[in-house]
Structure formats: structure tokens, C-alpha cells
Image 1 (cartoon, rainbow, N blue to C red):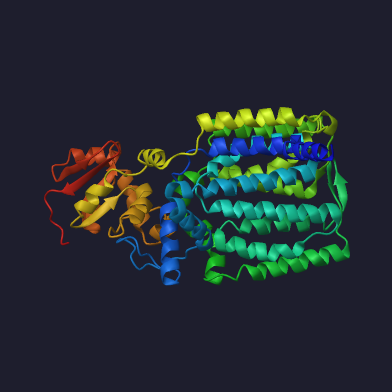
Image 2 (cartoon, rainbow, N blue to C red; image 1 turned 180 degrees about the vertical axis):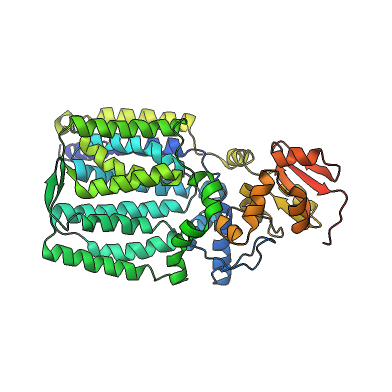
Length: 492
């Protein structure tokens, strides 16, 4: 009898309602993440990690192109590249699905944060599920996910400190040190921390917004933590140059911000924009109808996240992390979890049914399937041709294909890849933008002494070269076309 009771308790724990909700959220993340292994940066990230591991030196200049060769460069995500490289070595394309585990970890932490904020696990799961639709913009093998993982960890520490009057603030300086070495999004951490500290410098209530002043000891701890965190970001292989990098990004990389899709503003005519409109409308309506107090820090965080998320699509994930705990508290009309109504066997049945559906309709992609997916985005088919017919001159390639080419063909020097910073500083990206817009094509080809052009079969430049007698197509597949200059008049 005792062993039977122990088994029943174990069954109730393993298949409790809380576990089922966490499983459902994880399942949603998996479905949204399925097949998103096509980030163009992952290839040169792994090439950097390979160089570091093999030589024990950090790449500090361009080694992969002929247009910016030797140009000084800061590898701002060096630490986040290493897990992806080892994951590739362990499982190739399936290995870099490691990023899904990072995304699951982020939303697991966010679920906990929402529960801490609302005390309602059901409402927390619903809020996280809705916000995952915003976060999907950054799903893929991207180093920024490590930054968002640091952000969630930071918020958990701050929430524990706010609610209990104490918390492991000592974790924040090493967390910021980890963050700056994994991604350049670390200033978000200081913004969130700064708003948190500033919100407790005064006390009062303004309508439904309220603020409580920090005690002297709490404020002292926060100031010391902030100072230690500011010092911690200088613990990196590049020193102050890495600390300065986000400033350079905002002030000097104008073409990057103007032309790269993830730096563009939200388009409210697209489905993503409509989801954001619904989110904001829902928040506004709940703020008007439900008499819930707003913490001053929450207002500051949400305003910051809204401005950044609406201005730059890449920060919608940031908005999702900030909005989820607020939504969870407003979703208090959702009945809370009732332990007496929990039915482990029903939970088991639900989990089993969903697991079967996932395996049936969203199985882990096999290597051939993932290669087929990549072939729709990258010049997979031409690789063998390039290796058996090495270009006898400089090759101009499409921007999104550069990283893929340098990872798979080590002898090839590309025209450009998705390290936009170095190519903007070297003036190459401006020329590439003109090429795409069919401006000064002949002058740019002559400037860089181009003999070959590898572009999308449906691109404007491809259509132009197809009708230019000075160029001939020497290779063609469903995705790409390789041209060679027929009347070569450049000094190679």
C-alpha cells in the first residue's frame, strides 16, 4: 500500500497541471521554432569560433573577404559562437538546433517571472504564449538569444529583490560580464537596471501608478551593484573597444540600420504588426477597465520596450520579455490553479496526445530535410561546382550568402557577408546597396576587379547581366546563377 501511494504521489508530481502548462508552453516554442535554421550570421560565427579554438587567438580583422581584407574588426559575440561551433561538430545541422534549447530556457525563466509577478500559473502561461508570437522574430541560431537569456535572469534577480527586500544582487556583475561577451545587446541590461533603481528614488502615487522609496540599505546595495556591473563589462578580450561597440553601431552604422530588415520599423500592415496592435489595444483596455496598480518601474520598462520594439523589429523579443509579466498580472480573471481539480491521468493523456501530434507533424528535421530547407535559402547546389571549378578571379556574391560560402568553401574569398559593420566601415556595403539598386554597376565591377557574379536567379542584377553581352551565365540552378565576364578588361 505504501509503495502504491508513493507511486501515485510521484505520478501526480510528474504529470501535474503545472508540468502540463510548462510542457504546453515548451511545445508552442518548439512549433514556432521548427525549421528556422536559416540565419545568415551563424556560418561566420562558427568560422570565428573555429579560428579561436584552433589558434587560441581572437580574430581582430577581416580574414574572409577580399574587399575588406585586413580591416580592423571587433568580434562582439565571441563567447556565444563557441557553443554553436561545438554543437555543429557534434551533430552538424541538427546540432545547431541548440538554439531551440536556449529559447526554451528563456521562456521557462519568463514563465517563472510571470508567476512571481501574478501568482497565477495559468495566466502566466497564457501571457508567455501570446508574447512568444512577438519573440519569434529572433528565433533561429542567433547569438542574441544568449543576451535575452541574460535579460530574463536579470529580471528574476530584480523581482526577487523588489518583492522580498533582498535578493542575490551579487549575481548581476558576473551576469553583465557574461552578457557583454556573448552579445552587444548588453546596454539593455543597464537600461532595465537603471529604471529599476530610479523608480525607487521617490515615493508616491499618480493615478494607478505607484512607487515605493528604497530604504537606505537597499539603495546602497543597488548602487554598489551598478558600479560593480559597470566595471564588469570591461572584463572582455577587447577592453573598452567592445564597450564602445554599441555606441558605434547607433552612431556610425547608418546604412546597416537603414537597409537591414531586422533594423526596420514594425509594419502594421503585416500579420506581426497586427499582433502588436492587438497587444497594445489589450493592454490599454485592461489598464482602463481593470483597477490594477502599475509599478513605476513597469511603466518605464514598457515605454522603453515599446519604443525600441516598434522602431526596430529585432527588439520585439525585448518587448515580449517586458510585456509578459505585466500581461500575466492583468489576466487575473483566468481561474487560478486548483490542486483538488488536478487529474494527473488526464494530464498524461493530453501530454501524450500532443507529443504524438508533434512527432507526426513537427518531427526533428533529419539531415537531408534540413539540407533541403537550406537549399531554398543558400546556394547549396553550386558548392560542388565552385570546388571543382575554382573561380580564376574575384567573385561578387549576394549579401546573405557570404557567410554560407566562407564556411563551406575555405579557399573562397567573398565580396561581402552579413558582418555589416566591417563592410560599412570599409565602404563596401554602400557599393553593394548601389549594386542591388542597379546603380553604377559597371563602375563598381571595375573598382573591385570582379570577374564572377553569383546572385539569386530572380534578382534584379541577374536580369540585368542576362541581357548584357559582356557577361555569360556559366552555371545555373533553381536558386542561383553564376556569371563570368566575357570581355575581361580588368587587371586581375
